Image 1 (cartoon, rainbow, N blue to C red):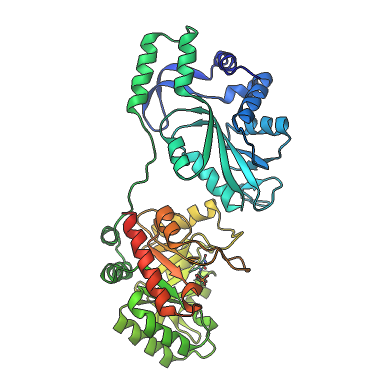
Image 2: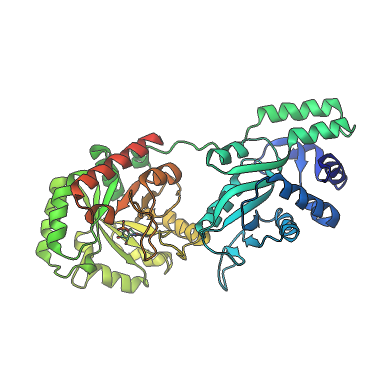
Length: 452
Ligand code: 6AU
């Protein structure tokens, strides 16, 4: 067994902890600074560290090891060599060419991955890594960290059900250094004072109310949608992906009171007509909901304009909201009319979607700049200036055989702070669509209020 104290003292000699006055990334003045990267310059210490970290997990139950980039990469590599458990590598950013994967290495869906982190403060980098790893279908149960700055990160991770094992806390380090005459009492007191007054925990701020969001929105359709939500106490958008106009009209009459909008894929209808659209418009007016055409435009601006205004559907004549990809760049959105709210597709719900973190960030940038865009379809939180529409919501199913992945209303409100849930088969395929629409409306509103 390696002696932890001796290991720490040897590491200290490498300069992994410095005392004095340091400005942290957050702007805070700290009396100490930790940088574990020099450990990689001592192969013998790195090897000892890997053994210590592996010993921390008393009941190992993982098939893969992954280090949070970059500082923990050599540590995770050393642990993999020591334990003969395969390593996977998480990229900090997508390389933009080749396979564009965020996780490199050989793994299969359902495997459990141990995460390794050098220093934990608020846990922000770990949460980002967990999101990427879980998105690839891997499970995260255990996390091992070398040093806990005791500023709230571990508690947040524990709350979410992750088990965090730490080799040292900053208190341990200070005690060991003091005992070995490497720190003076005055310095110890200064550090303890700093630790007591500085909790950087990223406690989640409450979400904005629909009333507050309405203030932030300039677009009349966004304001209208939010007004309907407030009035009806509903954030439910029903996606009626059926193929006959009579079915849509029938469902619209039955569930119209419970929804803020009905989402359509008009190009799947076998009997589209102008009369149908007129009738649907009058139901929408009577029941106070908007018409949301999920056309997902994805072409150059000129073609999108033709698809939007012409053809047999003439979407521009009747839709209140439309969806559009941003794949063709920001100018492709200029063709949509001012009176229609554009919802961009920033992140898709399906397994293996190409809309990774980098894509989503770029889609958000485009959306924030364009006054026609009122929000995005996404599976994670957005800036407050954009409304978040989340499809892939279902109370009874985890997904389908064609790639769709479902979440519950509770998850999308609690974790993403979504604004509107989009429910398709959960309603129109059920034996009693009216009951289900009421149920989704109640659940959606309950969890919206729970996160305020
Ligand atoms: O609840 P479902 O799976 O029966 O229906 C989900 C609806 C479908 C999809 O075309 C749409 O939501 N959708 C979208 C949207 C709204 O743009 C994006 C996405 O990523 N996933 C998704 O399911 O009509």
